[in-house]
Length: 281
Image (tube, rainbow, N blue to C red; front, side, top):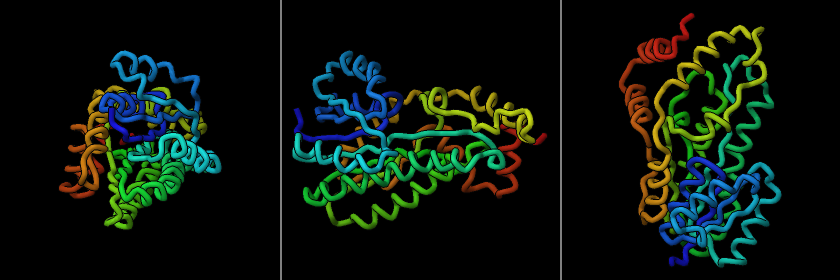
């Protein structure tokens, strides 16, 4: 068994759960954190099914409770002596047209998707600096590179994460700390089923965007979504790569979207999106 320690946020489902299992299978001691440890059942079952349960240590952590983060990181270091990998995966989405989004709904997404990841990283950086080694992996989204309809706030939070992480990578260059972004497209995870909610105004028939929101949601839900195990395996590979790339776009749809945005004139891009989502009415 490896003596390496990985800390993962948002481990109760989806990419976080699968990444915890993949790293545990690879021999890492995984501190799998989640806001509600009462939801650990799926992780426990998945780890047991692969024989990796002994390598997983489940702990409660709410990344938006910033004041508790340093103590949790200190506790991990006291017990295990080090932190080799931090996977910032916790995410939250509220869908709705920009006009309809309440400021508190926008703020909630930034608290989890941006400030939570920043707070975790700032708590872990001194540990990795002392070690002169470590991997920090930010789970972003294609939405951090490519804005789209009805998730403007989610996209904005991921754009913020992208810029901050690029700067961080430059700042820690030469310290033995590796920083990478993972940018998945559409995958079958809880963030777009259980985890995503519609904004309060977006669900009201009085919204001028109500019908467009319904059509958008139906269209997006009809799009085939990939198996998130591929993302988890990629994250595990990055954690073991001594020189990871700055970013990894994951998923056929994400790669196509990014390529089209780069080569198409913006007017064509607008028409393509409107036609795809049937939002021109």
